[in-house]
Structure formats: structure tokens, C-alpha cells
Amino acid sequence: MVKLLLAGTGLIGHRHMQHILDHPSLQLVGIIDPAVADKEIKGVKTYKSLDDTQLDADGIVLATPTDTHASLTIQALEKGMHVLVEKPVAASLDEADKMIEASEKTGFKVLVGHHRRHHPLVNETIKIIKSGKIGKPVAASLMWLMRKQDEYFEVDWRKGIDGGPVKQNLIHDVDTLRAFFGEVTSVVGTGTNVIRKAPRHESGGIVLSFETGMILTIVFSDATPTPWGFEAGTGESPYIPKTNQSSMFIAGTEGGLEFPTLRLWNGARHWNEKPSMTQQNVSEAIPLIKQLEHFAEVIKGNAAPIVDARSARETLKVILKIEQETMP
Image 1 (spheres, rainbow, N blue to C red):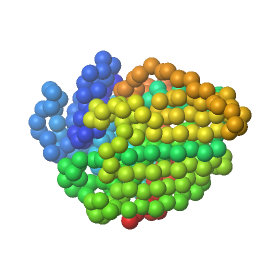
Image 2: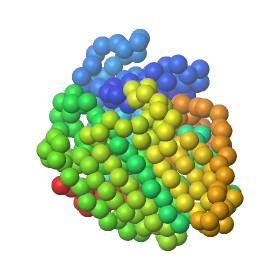
Image 3: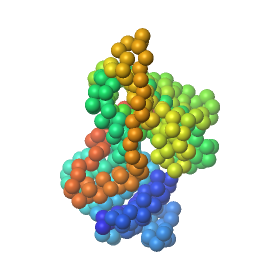
Image 4: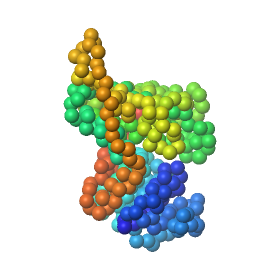
């Protein structure tokens, strides 16, 4: 059994907790959250802080506010634990650098919670792109268009910039795009907050350039209830109904691919010929569970983190630029 601590019992923390409790190879030995300290949750004792725990744990899952990620990660590493920390890896690039340094110094690993890397549809898309079935990717367009309920923003830390869809949601897309297409070389964008008029991002548009020369556009908003977004298209979140709609369209020199529906278009040499569509099918899996299983393998020394702190820093670098470009 791999023994894990969990810090944070919010939306994502609760999902982590349930998956750990349900997994036959994982054991939840303690929960850290000052809001529920000195109580029991599903038979597991809770603590106010990491300092209050004197438990034999192999690793810790950090599902706490972003501004605590660096300090808690470094503290856990120095206590001899491997760390699975939620995205974004840290609040700043400097903090991410300190986490990388602490991991290298202690020898314990940091896995960052970009859980989409563990989604079967993401992995199949990577295979399709690498196979050359659509040729060389030259352009793509991505939509993330959801409406968050007003109650979502009643939590204090979500009222400001950290509660906007860039750092909370698009960061997943940027990490996935890096897995698909490589590193981002430039970011241009604009944004508005005309609906809620809050001091945070709301809607915007971005153009990303990649090292391969590919161009990709993103349009995003958390003020519109459409079926177009990763969570809606895949049904990976239990809180968002599945729509089975494509939210990204990838154009290559030999055809195109819709994601996450995996409709593959090819067979046409130019616009006077009609392309044909074939449906790619993959088995389903819950990426958060796959991520925990990967974390267990990292702890055992059987695998390197798919997304370590250094890789997550590159995603954060792009996200901070997007924030800068799209802040109303």
C-alpha cells in the first residue's frame, strides 16, 4: 500500500480524497485542512497543518490554494515525501524555481496535477499527431466556453485574478497543447469582463505561436453556457454534463482532427476534393485515478513524473503571459 496525505478538501481535494479511499493500492493516512481540523472524514483523522502530522506517509497530494503550493511542497520534500501538487505549480516562476531546486536537493519528486496528460483521448491524440495521419500540423483553433455559477466566486480567493478562467482552466489546455505541439514561442491576446465586471479575467482571445511554426487560436469565456470545452466534451468532470462536442480543430498538411471527439478528416489533396471522416475510438478512464496510479509508480521509483515541476513551470510561463495579454 502506498500511504498518502491529502492537504485541502475543496472541489478537487474532495475528488482526490474519494479516489484514494476507493483505490485498493492506496491508503489515505491523514487529511490536512484547518477548516476541518481535529475531526474525522470518512474515518480519516484531520490536522490543522503539515507541522501537526507525525505520520508515516510516502507522499502528499496538495489541493490547496495556489499561493501555498511552493511553501507546502518544499516543506513536504524536506520531510521526505514525494509531492503531487495541483496546478498551477506555483504563484510565480521564482516560486516554481525554488520547488525545482528543493526537489533536486532532496531527491524526492514533484508531480504536478495536469491530469489531462493521463486522459486516454489526450494520449490517442498525441499518437495520431505523431503518426503523421494528418501530416504536419499548421494551424488549430480551441474553444473553452463555459458559464460558472455565481456561487463559484463567493470563495474569497476566487473573487480576484486567481479565480478567472486563465489560471484555473486554460492552464490545463496550455499544458495539453504543449504535449501536442511543443513549446510556445509567442503569445498575443485581448480580453474583457463586460458581464460580471469583476477584477479578473472573463472572456478573451489568444494567438499562440509554436516552435514548429504552427499557429493556434484560443477563445475563452466563463460567462456563456455552451457545449464547447474540454470538460463538457469529454465528461471528465462529475460536475459538468457531457456534451460529446468537439472543442478543438487541428489542421495538418494531410488532413484534420477534431478533439475530443477524435473525428479524423483526410483523403483530400486540396479544396476541390471532398475529405472523408473516420471516427477514432478509445477506451474510457478517469484521469485523476490514472494520475494517482502514476504518482504511486513515481513514489516506488518505477516512473519519472509525466509533468514535473520544470515542465509545469513552462506552462505557468505561458499562462502568466496570457494573463498579462488578456487582463481587461
